[in-house]
Length: 99
Length: 463
Image (cartoon, rainbow over all chains, first blue to last red; front, side, top):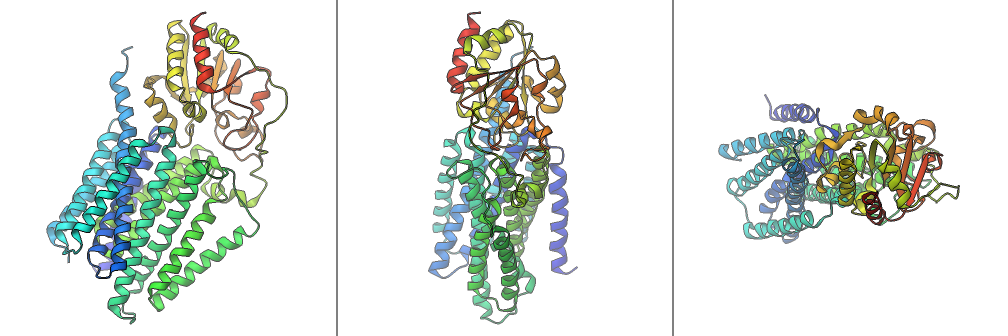
């Protein structure tokens, strides 16, 4: 199998997995799910680190560092805020009065 | 070449992301799901530093530290009511990062190739795609942020040349991508980024305030696809898998949200361009309404047997959830059956209201979803609508020209008595009048939701 075919296979399978895993989500969780998915694409940080780490020019280094800061804000902020939202969901369950 | 152990670590990280999304789609597992996602992200980022032979490591670690601090501060400081804006902002910076990464990669490959186009054409297309979609996501998210933060008008902005400008930008993108494949050069990438920024603005301007959350979800999916393409360009599997997962699930989520509002995605994005469908005077009507004081409303509530509360964004803005929860407890102690009717898009985003009420520690079993409770309004004595408007507007059923026409609504109009707590006669986020306000069985209690709610609570206590 040639290289592009491997990538295409990974891509197509990921599409199906992405659709399948969230197909039964209730509307209650739409907001945290959107926020969590948002945090996941923060892994572009990896890409930013790779291109910045291989560059030799100063301008590219500066641009790369900006990209790293932005990607980190996306990833770290995304996970923290999602956790903050979900914390309230679980917190409520614990304090639920017995009926 | 990435060493095998690192490839395996990336695989584990990719699995973490799948489990994260899986966990996030059920209330019981959501928080763990998010933590698994974070673990995957840390693993992937740790791996890259050891697997690749990198320069500037300290500068990059410092940049990560700065980004982390900014991200955590943003995430901790934000009010729950401002959540949609923050998600939009985080999404936007992610898109910007993806576009910048692709630009740097373009710079690197063109420098190595020395102008000779022996770079695979598909790689160049993927670079172009990453730049454009990342830029669209960035500028589009900034406009959604401005709309939600009400830095600009929340109503659709349409100008005569908009469809032409939009079409021209799309043609320009295709043309520039072809040029990029034929004559790879950094300047083409920069122009692509600029066109992408314009495209993002043009995409979001015609979208009305109430539909903005759908657009955030769509832009979130865009950023995912941009990251996936970036993964292909850099030959990094975890980027490809994570980006594709977000792209696919984000697209589905966007469709689900649009469906909850009774809209098709195309109608959401381009409905305003067709004209007519986005009426809405946006001004207060001067038709007569019946208003009452807190004491009258307290009597209505105190002698009811069945009460349903319809909370809206206005409740959260006034921070009146806690007082409302107290009121419900007092009514419950009097033997009155009280439930909350939660419209799927109550608040500013699907599921937003659940988050806001969770913050006020409203018991979960009092929150009823629309399908569950819609049949019960007929037997309900009093419906108390607090800071909600569009989700109870019968125009969604009766007025084909209205922007919210077709959206499933709560059948509040079937109840025996309706009380609206409102600040003013200003229309809701969708910018249209609500006939229900002028209905003979409707009573209005004007004032700030928190203030009115405290007075109402005091009045109910004295009954």
